[in-house]
Length: 215
Ligand SMILES: Cc1cc2nc3c(=O)[nH]c(=O)nc-3n(C[C@H](O)[C@H](O)[C@H](O)COP(=O)(O)O)c2cc1C
Image (cartoon, rainbow, N blue to C red; front, top):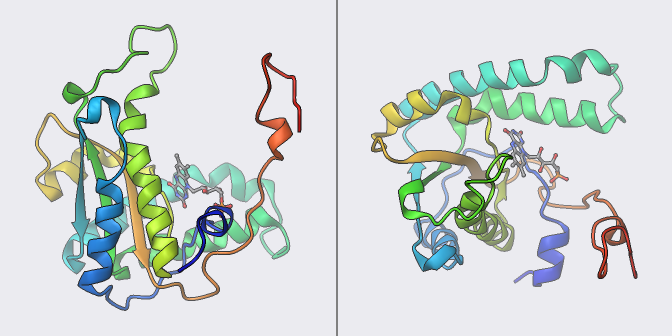
């Protein structure tokens, strides 16, 4: 099995996925990885709806296509779309592929959360609250690392939050629950996980004072 640091350093977005089914034992391990995640007060205020129904995925795909098109308008006008060496163009093409093939993925993992079960310690601050998400995205990251270990491609998506009402109605999600991550998973069509481009650590981590980097 892939070593942990190798998994973390090659966990890139994989948007071209085969429709081949995921064996039940592998899906069970991926979901177990989510369940192991730490959450505030160990309350585990998240649930996962695994969508495999073609009929439902077709509806979801239509919503995703609309939101992806809306989200990428500016990106498309800022690049030469025939320049395949441009990383933005490559992302756009992979994203277009996903938007046109969501109906065909073997599973879409919809992460739901219940804010009533969360101690959201930054809720009263004069800025957008982030802490509540921390009791879901730990599970999201565990899920994606498990996919990496199992040779499955995946990508964290959030554009379907714009269509939360429709998603809740389609999947029977109770009123008090929200949705915050939608992860299509499947075997990669191309190379799958691989090199990632990130800021160097000394631009992200400081020692004792903001801006003071040691490494
Ligand atoms: C909070 C969050 C939301 C994201 N939403 C989307 C999305 O809706 N659609 C999509 O194609 N990718 C989405 N991504 C994937 C990012 O675009 C991707 O991780 C980032 O560009 C880095 O790409 P790489 O992992 O391939 O290096 C999201 C990632 C995060 C962390």
